[in-house]
Image 1 (cartoon, rainbow, N blue to C red):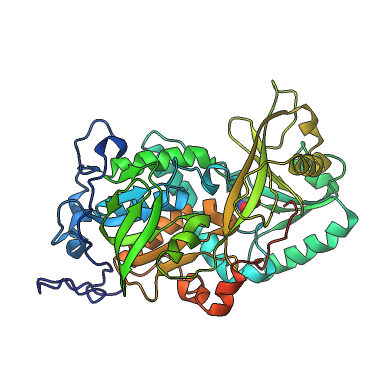
Image 2 (image 1 turned 120 degrees about the vertical axis):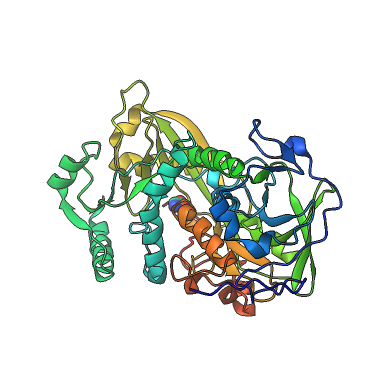
Length: 463
Ligand code: GLY
């Protein structure tokens, strides 16, 4: 644990106080109070709900609060997806005056499209084992995190249902055995189910399911419900959440960001900028003269409904090596997802619908009777090593990266907010953050790879 020393020299010495950040000049244009914050029962001043955080929290952030000038924030969070909202909520709760800027509506990016699997084990690939501890820690946090959100009257729809990875082709059996061996070698509990045990466990599985790996600890949440819950929680904690405010440029003077400029001419100031813009992070980084290896990888998904109970849909997460089916509490089911290197293309395609339905039907034939409710496309923020950027920038002292969560963004939500707060206060992080250090993606070679394929990405396909 680092010691915190409050400097009383009249000027903030960054880093030395165990706190990171640099005061910005005040914004050139006042944030529009009508477009900020959400709690109608609280007085809003310059976009912030002035609900005092508990004394305990406020006491713990002396240097960030000290010397605060009107109209600037302690922290600006860029990106109103799940990661940005989690960071904004936790920062605001800790007593940091926080403003979140979202380019469209909350959850308009990957978060509003995500299937919501909490799957650190079944999403694990051979190249990703260094991050397993963090992913398992994120999973552990979900029940308490969901309960905390539910206390705000917003239910994130957590299902602790477990997941089963099925072999449907004879060739899949070998791959499943290899995955089981990998998982067990990492100390993860998984159970091998033969055909009979599998069908007894999940009656919605069809006869093509040959065997499966059962992971009891996994589950799912409803990402849209979680987004709504986080937006309420963040606003109640005092954060200003401003939608339809695309950031177009970050302005720096050598080692610090000194302005955040939006498309409508507004500019914002803050001591700290948390960049949580997902697949859009790269463009923003370029305005700072930084090339980071984060790229969009398109995913298409379907939402099915039970059609007055006639379709037998699974109550567990069911996946094969080519598709996943994720139940919702209300009986709907998400089928995903394509993995497509097509930049920011948003089209939903007939081919994707056909492949997803074919693959899902193979393992869950009951979808025949399901209603097709939605076809969605989103953009995962991918990195060359499939791990996020979570940490302070090596060059820009008041820039904190929280982006690039690839296929695990929903899983990371409770941990990401906690990690951001620990970094800001210079506290011991909740997990080892070295594998997520933004420095690793700054070599020219890796930056160049950012425009290409990641370790796991296929040019197109379903999984
Ligand atoms: N986490 C599932 C996906 O990215 O498709």
